[in-house]
Image (tube, rainbow, N blue to C red):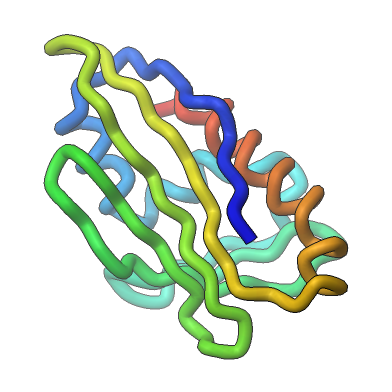
Amino acid sequence: MHIEVAKKKVGKSAQEVFEFLTDIRNFETLMPDNIDKFEVLDENTFRFALKGMPEIVLRLKEQNPHDKVVLGAASDKLPFTLTGSIEPIGDTESEVGLSFEGEFNAMMAMMIKAPITNFMETLSANMDKI
């Protein structure tokens, strides 16, 4: 299953956005208002829960300086990745695109597509908080 949301212009350089996204503590700033829990487990891993949803543990899996940040599920039970692609627009502006990639059966995909899309759209909208 692949989900992509519209790219978001951010009034920060690609380097500033990259540094923000690779510090996993900063993801609490990007979370939706209905967050129930946010806990940093180590420098590369955090756990969060939204009201009415199970807890999700994300780990920083890959980072290409000033270009891409990939978070992935810490568990192999539901393998997926959330990728932030960063494109510089100038010295003080960049564009961030978020995409989700996961391996799910058809029933699971149908159940989670809308909540994941909404979650990603909120993360993207909150990029203004960087």
